[in-house]
Length: 78
Image (tube, rainbow, N blue to C red):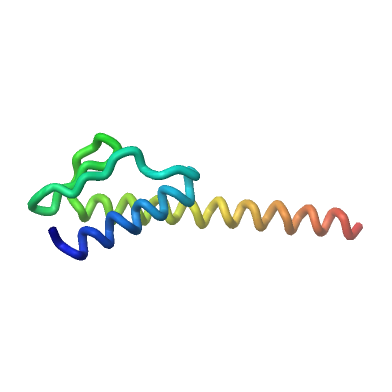
């Protein structure tokens, strides 16, 4: 098992937890750079890409929340 694979899996798990408020259902590190995540078999590079997508969604959600709070504060100052 490659240490890099473990880090990728950990980063995915953290991003998934932040976005969905629960741990991923199933993660298995297979041989030759393959993993199973929530029943889907993929290469570790695909999991890295998926992790990036999850992090983008997290950032967009955070930006939306900040925008809502900012608009609310502006409205309250009126």
